[in-house]
Length: 117
Image (cartoon, rainbow, N blue to C red; front, side, top):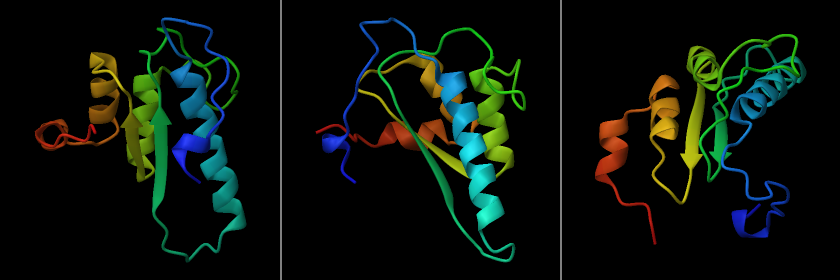
């Protein structure tokens, strides 16, 4: 699927995003996929976060498993579970840089490349 055909709705001009809730939902999806997959399968796991706002400074409330966790704590869990986190944003947002690093990303390497068109 191409990103250009995704229907992005909601937001309504908010200055923050519910990134922690989104990452918690993604972790649940990966857990569900793990149950359906052959235990011996060697797979790569990728999570792509597309956003234009920094995260709310709220912890997860909708997930019992990850309740109380912040976006940064969930990024660490993604790294521990060997899930690669990619972040796509049209703006340079310091808190997203921090999330990327917490998820195991190498910020210095990523900043040497210009991905913008």
